[in-house]
Image 1 (cartoon, one colour):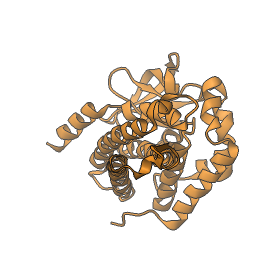
Image 2 (image 1 turned 30 degrees about the horizontal axis):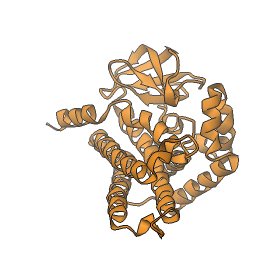
Image 3 (image 1 turned 120 degrees about the horizontal axis):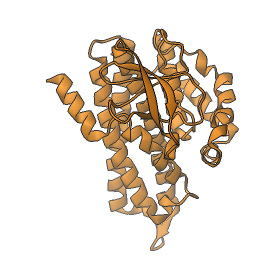
Length: 296
């Protein structure tokens, strides 16, 4: 087991970061929120130029790693597009993307995106999306489903892991923004970063972020290797991703102060658009319960 991604995959992620910045960067999510129906046209052409939709994340380990780094770059810019869900689409269904949903009140960030769209539950029940309700924040919409089959167990691991890489990208950016903020801001004539309490908080947050980085690579390896426990590894990653996000965003908001909740601050947009990733398909308690049930 090698807990690192291939250099070509890493370079692909760096190219994606630059491409998203050139396409608008932080302004993309703001434009998409103002006009949700335009979010596909804002970024789809950039993703096509990168060759994102040519990636075969299911059957090729190198392309799986490239897909993961792409999701991480998308998260860094809070890209208003379900990149992870599209890359998770199953090969045996003619659909645009796949979302893992809860058994009750299924929802996914598909508002404003043309289908067809499919869903899968943790138990492997696959359904087709035949309609959805009005969009909530984060482009999340309640779904109307039509059952397809119960052969989606193999789809679950990948469809859980890639969104966690998106969330990891958001934590990368949140930490970067906060380090820059406390370095620039001064109190009593010295930078905030010089205070021991601030350093302790940043260290706590970085431990969570870096730990999630390692777990994300392990889960990706597990999926690529086709391990029988890949779905459990994916659930463990999701649990850790939610816990890490709670710590990182709490620390980053505290160190930004009130300005961290203003729309003029990038952290506010990152925090807001991390919520669907942290709550869907299962929150922290439900994820822990499901993992415990499967491991017992």
